Amino acid sequence: MTITDVRVRKIESDGKLKAYVTATLDDCFVVHNIKVIEGRNGKFIAMPSRKTKNGEYKDVAHPIHSDFRNDLQEKVLSAYEQALLSDEEEVCIVLTAEV
Image (cartoon, rainbow, N blue to C red; front, side, top):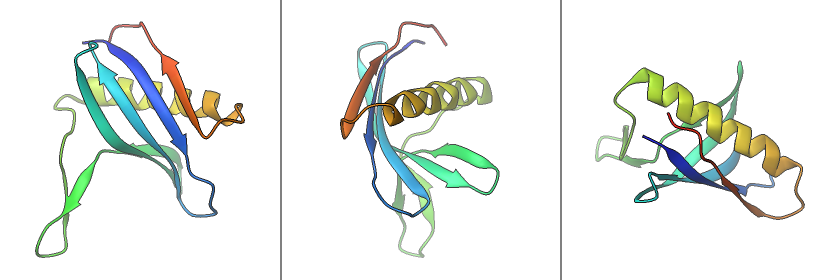
């Protein structure tokens, strides 16, 4: 599977949430609202989720294999770092590497 496009929307705040990301896979499937979060051990991604009736958060979409999750996280965080260099609020990074 190829991650073909990553769009980063930076969040200007002092909180842990740093950006919302949209990733396009194989130019035919889009995942919105991936979050870039600053954690205790560095930045990581959180997949889109919804709150259940009992207050837990459940992922709406997520990678099944850890290899793909690691590749997705690497590409999203790389795109986020590139976006930090831009003055634009939303930055699109086109990718062509297969995952």
